[in-house]
Length: 479
Ligand code: BG6
Image (tube, rainbow, N blue to C red; front, side):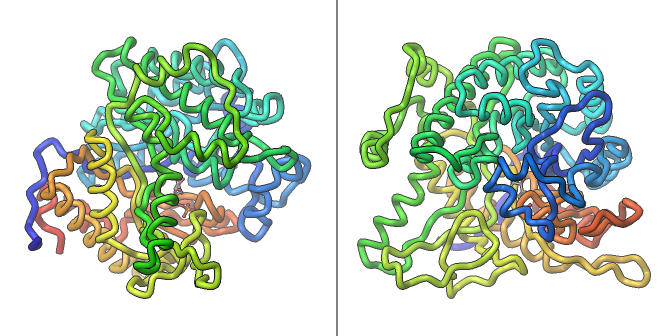
């Protein structure tokens, strides 16, 4: 099919995305409790190891914790939202810090100061006509829940989560319409501490425990969807997947099958959240992994009845897989293991760049679910150079985003329904995976380094002016 110059719909939600634990800082201010992310050191302090060893992480005192101050959005949100408004943002994706509202996670009443902070943030967004898009749980489960209940492995966590949802759905009833129940819900399979606030290192069958925790999250997500719709029928609730289609390394059917299995690993979640039932292939998956899920009588009916309104996802790259263990030229630094694709270039962190892969992924997801999509993360993590005159010429970021937006348009021309686009880290923030500041995604530069030095001053990068023009022209002017 030929390339078209796609016209985006008038109400298309152009914006950007952040997460509380990566930008707010103020980690113990105004009654906030500890989030599990607050226990993680920077890359140089052993962050990666800490992510896979929660017990040791809890017992260790590190020299430096990037989330504790982060980029201090907590105190600078007015200045930051003003800059987003200057770019013409129609929406702003952010998350609500669970331990800011329920410091330990299992309290029955919320922390009023925490709620007031988000009152103020949402008011600031609306002042500029920016629609907030809220992730309810973006990797920041309260440490209290991890310590006392092993996070999502316990069914009790469903109730704590729903209590949190009930409070925020009611409080922000007139401020927030777009919700997502869990960020990258499939992350739990790869980093259970991030995704599930849980420790599986001592588990007899870690796979079973992960899928049990997943069942709890899926049920929680369905109940949350029910609640959101009851509290405000206009609410739109989405699921959120770390997406990226998997390619077969060769036309060997064994590779093709492997690729299908890899994609199903992620689709599994959306199959339940968007279709309302466990997919047919799950029975064999559970049998082979020796998993018997504990369910309550009403679980299946709840899953069936309360499916999501839209399917949100992050897309950074496609993935590549082979059935042959000797074909192993993996790239580094990515949670989702992938082989090196000889047709693609990669970022400095080894994340392969595949704009057409976005079109492929969008078509694949839309074909499968026929629900509106929302691209809530996409972008290039790169080192930026501040020139002597203060300018930051991030043409590489502009190139990355332009190529992806073009393919997004192509996918819409293919018939995919897309609600909006919120590139990741619209303002520089702490990297989730590495804890670094130098892995920057933003249109707005923040003066802060990996060790926490810097003035925190904000400045506009070249991409800031470019994206402003993209929004102004509703995606027409990309060059
Ligand atoms: C996604 C997360 O996995 O990727 C974000 O939802 C994260 O929280 C983003 O920041 C980019 O990853 P990283 O490791 O470069 O920060």
